[in-house]
Image 1 (tube, one colour):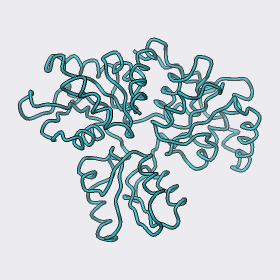
Image 2: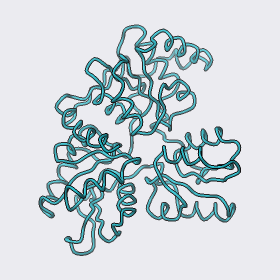
Image 3: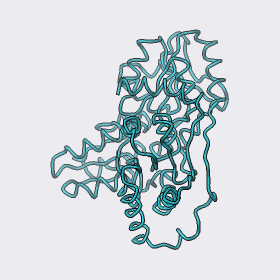
Image 4: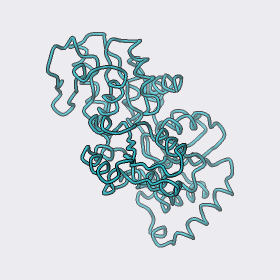
Length: 367
């Protein structure tokens, strides 16, 4: 079982940071970054706020940031501007001498929280009874260290939305069936793209502890954990219909964490990096409706004024947990480091880390 240690200072953000204006905070962050130099490294996920992402030393999706963490052997302090599971991954892929911090420990992931290790072990026991030794587990990187360790010790791997197809193809060279968690939509969309029909996919419901499937069990090729991304599940086929009605020539591109019906109704789909690259490489004058997190969509709009870009659902909110990392929390974390203190340290226990690294290393080998 994972024991991720978070070493807090005073718990809540000190009041002084709530009273500082943005210019003062930005000046202090730059000052500390310059002072610490190569001893400090700040990775930032695409979904972060602009006030934070401006200070990132590397910007990317989950796969890119995992690769950056694995390659970085120099920085003493890694202040991860993302969510909890990403900081855990960074801790497991860096050296014991490096320390990983999460500026706000409340920055979790609702999807990762939809699969805990107790539910997963129970599900695995039941599925093995049903299907025998024919299943291999894959876990989306948006999962806890404990789930990654479960996958590692059972011969499976992590995946990201960037390499999900490669990893699903690999999994089927290992076993006859695939157990994919915690995001049912990425698993379903990826398997479908690889030619597996929907009627060969079952859903494991962790709440009821039951397999949801109508048909002969021998036909099942993919078992999907009943989890989802709260942000991407908010995009609908009706959103696409409205866009096509208002902008007939506009292309719709979505993230594969969207439900299957939305992905099928769109013009294209892919990982966060895929979406960013698609817009970057598109010609001036092209028009897009993007179905992904709002902070990123707004940033893409600002960076490409020569294109007509909108959110597929303009009433969507940014990822609430990702947004817990803000400029005051970033500065607080950096000032603690500057003063020789360690607050909000992310540390995965070694037993869990060893098993989880098996899963991560299999993923990175195919990245």
